[in-house]
Length: 112
Image (cartoon, rainbow, N blue to C red; front, side):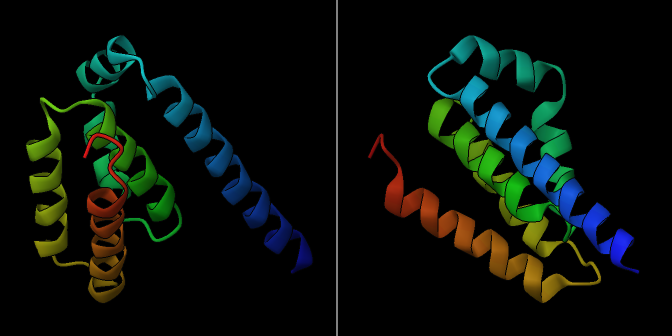
């Protein structure tokens, strides 16, 4: 019903707020990036990519990790390519979203 639709929108909004907070915490703060990685955050966000519900937000966090952590950049991009190879229910959409993320990374990377 209508209540279910509103609950879904609230949840999507909450995910976006959490994503925005994560990105702000990771931005220009190598210590936060390291803590996030050591706590399994990068792997968790990578796994969220398989959820159509939160994929774009997860990809935004991964994009920020690539921008902020040049030491792990190659591994992050390799992991995204692995995600594209993993079969799932919406493989085509998953591949499209990951490719769009990679395109943004390579065209907008503030570090060149």
